[in-house]
Image 1 (cartoon, rainbow, N blue to C red):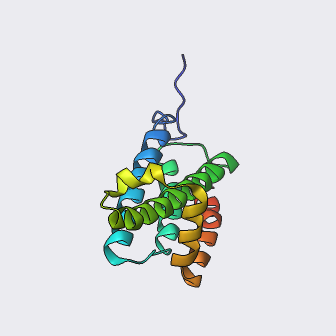
Image 2: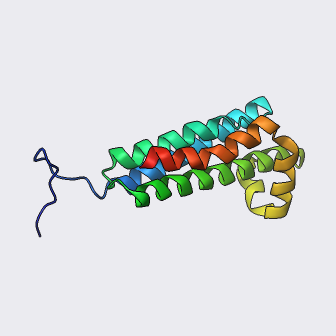
Length: 141
């Protein structure tokens, strides 16, 4: 099987993008969720950092540039935003019931999480959450 080479002669790391992206997504959910639970705020601005991080991880992992990489960065950003909104809501509701956030996560339905997120996010948070996938599209190209 022939090796794919960059123009400068080094082997292409075409497979490394997926583990890097998954690691970045997991750490972003944990860090952003912990920040939100510790401060009692949503911190929507972190979504913009997640968008930049997603694009960077795909570049560093060797994924080919183009729409595929841009869409992958945007999808990863949306998944992190949803996971964080769910985790923060579960952390607050779970604490009231004497549960840890990871125990409350599977007990919450999507409509309940959506309602809690709409109540908790400020207008600035919502703008940042809406702009993050667009920034990820740009960062991923």
